[in-house]
Amino acid sequence: MSPYVMLIISASLLLGTSLTLLSNHWFTAWMGLEINTLAIIPMMTYPNHSRAAESAIKYFLTQATASMIMMFAIIYNAWMTNQWTLFQISNQVASTLMTLALATKLGLAPFHFWVPEVTQGIPLSSGMILLTWQKVAPTSIMYQISPSLNMKILITLAILSTLLGGWGGLNQTHLRKILAYSSIAHMGWMVIIISINPTMALLNLLIYISATLTLFLSLNLTSTTKIKSLANLWNKSTPMTLIIMLTLLSLGGLPPLTGFMPKWLILQELVAHNNITMAMLMAFSALLNLFFYMRIIYTSALTIFPSTNNSKLQWCYPQTKKITLIPLLTVISSMLLPLSPLFITLS
Image 1 (spheres, rainbow, N blue to C red):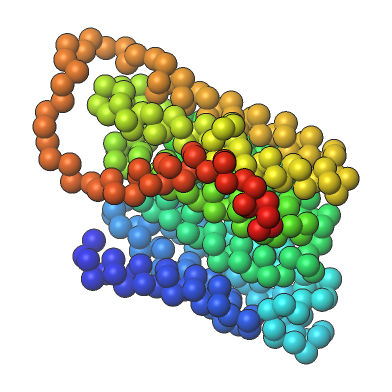
Image 2 (cartoon, rainbow, N blue to C red; image 1 turned 90 degrees about the vertical axis):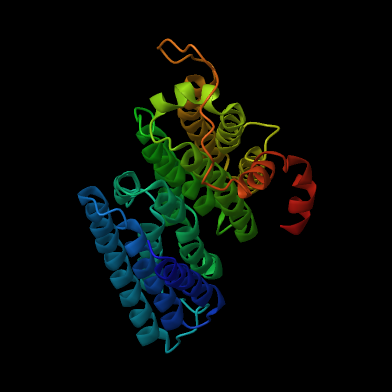
């Protein structure tokens, strides 16, 4: 792709998200989401492949449907309350429709079917943006209207997302689909706490984004898209194998890694608000995710590739892909647990 085209697309993505983050009017927030959707589609279809084109069409149709529902909710709310301000969504019907539209944009169950299919059909770089940056704008809207959201709908969406995100990833062999189901489950963790403690939801999103970015950049560096390809990764790049293993354990929520912090704090908040059954369901569903993360770790770190390998030395080809961000993101996604008291104080 031409650098100028890439610059325009990147600027559009940044503009769309910034417009949604900074707006206090429903129309500008909706317009920011639309700019985001239209900006990423050329990036998805850059390798001229039928699978990428199919994924882009699926993504566009799903997002267009969600935007239509969202605009209907905005107009209905303005009709009932005479308000276009982002914080004013007191009408119950408009609030429910807005929740469902944002759930579709975020890929929450039962509106999650597009996420694995779209992620599987596009390159790793586009999948990384889809599962990280594209979550920011809808989450910011959900954060701002969190006091008026229907708690019962949110709980249903969250529990379905964590359970289906766990079950769906169990029998997958493609890493992009596994990361898509992981995204669905993590969005469930974020949504269940957003009406109780919105700051905790943002913390969960930031840690999820840092861990997912680390994983996608590592996989992109090694050009790995399937679990079986990881079996020989220790022979090509031992540091990358270690980074992938740490990041997966962090995404699974194991202490003493960073990913344990949001799960621990969210469960603590749920128990403090007498939602013990929900806390138990969420904790059990986290085990499903941990299982398929452990499958990947077992393949990449504890097995040997089933072929004769006479040399551990690789040809010294110059590395064209940059690894500048990977060390920093690895530290963020695996070593921030000692800062938990600070985050507790902030929330």
